[in-house]
Image (cartoon, rainbow, N blue to C red; front, side, top):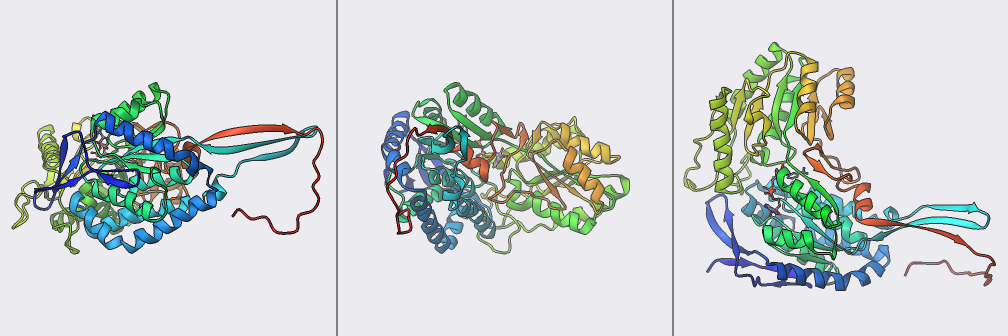
Length: 499
Ligand code: NAD
């Protein structure tokens, strides 16, 4: 009997009732390890109703008490780090150390959200007019939702739900149907930490569940992360239904390698950022841009043996550089892009398509691929491949290198490797991309800054986590007050507390 994954609603796991299920694979073996329930519209509506009922009391709690739940959640999640990472790795295929990073980067946003009593403070102007004070306050929106991708099944749900819950909202999470177990466990841990029932409900599902969220009038805001075409659909449909929506999409992140860069450092960076997690990261480097012929020759000379010697292995093997891709469909998609690149005339310097893991021939493994002489008109340059494939585009000079990521339709992350502070400063200022690394290949901002790409990598105007998340999950109310006469009760001698 295949294991079944249901939903988490009202503080408990509930079975799906739609009769529809999706397969959850073990990407190492290629076998189905579980079936996840795919929610119907009415199941989503029931989860929203449950959340709506719970939300007002949660919003009425003082922010310190809400933060204390988050503090307890952090302790529980840290204590379970090993088993959470193993579970994540078994459904996603990323290595266990990388899975720990996925969880940790999510927990850092929970840590940020523990500061919610400070973050929610409004503004105050005394004597804005004669006897008039003016102040603003941030109030929760009500019930909000998050729709998240397969590639960070802990980090992105936590980026969404932690600030939303801390602000006093109830949250409906619709995680990826490819790896739903960690999001379900996160909801259970929040409950163990003291989160009231209904404040974090998880509905598993596909387009049917998403469409129910998009059109339900009780959902006030939606945070989405996934591919750009779906991001655009979520943004246009959600806003057409009067919701606040922020959507983060696909990417094609370039790394510029200037002739003066430390080439060994640049190669290390490209190997880790290009092939880590089998390239299934929205901040993966998928395009390397050496500047000038000499830099290109040196870079290729050093890259080829490193790509050939990548250690591809089981996601549970601590010695693996990266594990399998998430599904067979993903593997075939990436392979077909490599085939297309060859047809388009790019030079395939390393071909990892035929890699097979001994004893795991049905697993979704793929060796590292490296293309040289890729040009901007090629499909493999224009589109996101999302696999262990790095394309090298040779630039004549700095201006051409700057123009490549700037004019690409995606604008998530970008990096420059150089020893020249002036070039780095000019690049950071001019490049038309949302997140920039200077000698840092994956410039994912920390929890107290904000994360967001530009152009087709981001739809909507506020970024994820950091102060923007508090703005996104609250609405501002501004009060102008005048008291014609005072009420003077006398002195109070004990220190006021928020208990
Ligand atoms: P995806 O777009 O296939 O799925 C994302 C979510 O949308 C899932 O919950 C899925 O169930 C839902 N969905 C899928 N098809 C749908 C449809 N037709 N209608 C409604 N909902 C639908 O993305 P994925 O494959 O899970 O994730 C990989 C993508 O996410 C890549 O493009 C990657 O770059 C992107 N990503 C972006 C960021 C970022 O912050 N910019 C971060 C991580 C991943």
